[in-house]
Length: 398
Image (cartoon, rainbow, N blue to C red; front, top):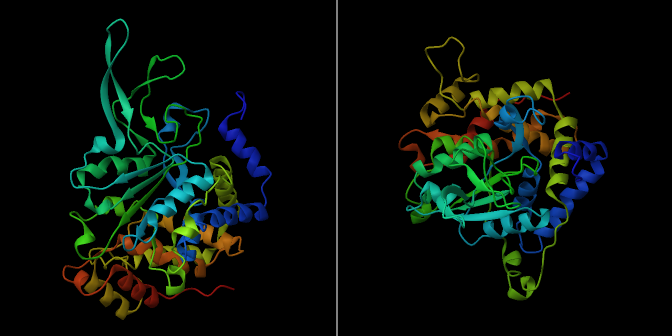
């Protein structure tokens, strides 16, 4: 990218030269790289690589200060991920290999009950020049990266997660915002910090994706439940289970030591591929109806409104009333459409059909449900949603 060409221009030009086969090739190259370090995790790897191309609407503060690049207040940003599964299964290695394969700046945050916001977003410190003048500047924390892995997120206090929620919702932070320009060592100020690998450069690739892990077993559940506001901003959850016996036998030092991962693509190509899929794959009318119907059917009926939330059989209505305290919010319409769009594309379709919605629905919706008191001890969110999915009639595609 030369000095006269903006990032927007570079991405736009690349999109014009893309084809379906090239996007598929980028996807397969990343999968091949990641699989060098991991065994028996083909499905989670495929889901995680697909998530790089998912684009979800978000509130774009840059529109307020850089009209040259964006004119609206809604932009398209990356999906946010929740990993579920036992410890030692390869979640951290998966994220590290993804970052290496796409040449992204990555960071890891280990969740602890003692963690404070400054440990995640950074904090202020005094700097003194040769004349003895002192100023307060902002020193960025690990959240200001392209890929952020928050390990054992359910061990972090809810108030600490407020900064993470802001970043996931707006792709920016509002901490003390003075920074040192590395070029001339002068102190400069931004109205806020855009999230990216180079947060002081508004034209750097604005790729930001958070992946959280939690260990949902016994004492590993952590000290604090993940706040509902956070769960509602997670685009999809990916379940990683223990590999098969034969695959687990491959987990030997001789099979991984010395194996390196070199970048096979870059963030600009990833952004262009995501935009290409977004422009190419359209939502069918039947999938449009089914998408909203399925989301509304996760909420208990509201007797105060004539337009009932749950639209289905008496069995479905009774089941939701008995099992679900809070269902999916309207925000999920964005996420479910976005995930289904990418799944449809890599399934060889340029149209999102109801079958694509059904295929990804559990990954997008299950983790957002809040079950009735007592119900969570006898069943899981996934099981409850699967029953709702089963009782919600899917329109037939013609």
